Length: 400
Image 1: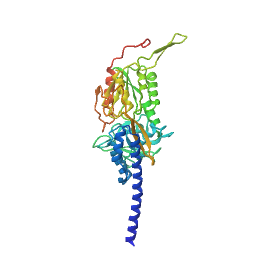
Image 2 (image 1 turned 90 degrees about the vertical axis):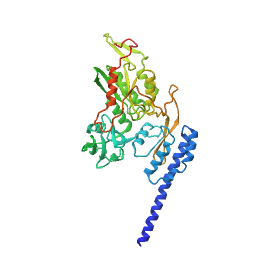
Image 3 (image 1 turned 180 degrees about the vertical axis):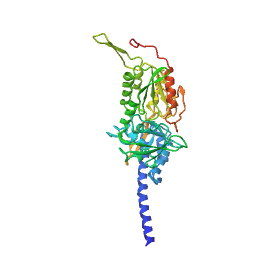
Image 4 (image 1 turned 60 degrees about the vertical axis):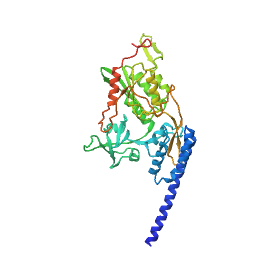
């Protein structure tokens, strides 16, 4: 009897495996077909598709399929070409940026308000979003997240059912020292709303070297809201600051050439005078020195803006060389809901191709993330450099 049960179970297992394998094969065929039809280099796409025909059938699990797909796409050696399974932060981010293309109104997820980076030692907090739950709970840049509610940390899955619930997060702040247990209450929030809130709440004016330096961090630059928020800040709230640092590190790109108009010194300065003779000066652009803080995670439109502003003498770049990831991509939703990101166009800026090259900085400062205990030497240097820059000659009246 036991023998027949074993045979039956084996038969069911084989059937289930065949069904799963067929699903992976179908999804793999979708990936191959989309790359063949959409990838910007048609010849390369055809050769790649021929080599990887039927690759999905070799997958034995979701993790295995993701690994095989990542490895296959990496052979294309192209930015904006990636695979984002559901239940990953990349899927959330891409869905948020391309919500119109993907026909989504909102892209909500459960967040504790951090951006993390994978390092050999584990997952480290790269950015604590201003105004978010993690900031309120005391997480710091450089903390290694050990566990959430006693389980190994997975950036999206660990928080899936924790919205509004006090959650135990164990972090290692000092290497080799006993970990800390912090209580975070994650929230359900739309991704773009979170990025915009973090941008606006990161704004501050910092005294450095006897000067007032304005600062704002743009985790994403995709969509007019981010440029408008920066404009509102620098032209109104920070108008009396003597220099500006814009933090372009990591996150998502998306900036377009119109971004430069925020710093266009050729725009007119308007002065209005009321009936009492009191003048009101309106500046349509920021006229004081600018530092762009960049690193290897600064991608896409952020790189294009950085290159253009550097070439035109509009900004000093501090940090590390940018990613060199500037192809134009579009997302494709696969039949199971996963997203394939495909580079569909090549391009250059002012005749210079930045793909695979990136933008070099004027002042190089290496990253120092693991166990930083909240310290940020790249930001410190950017503020220091900003404080040393002399303001340009006034281009118009009313700038005194």
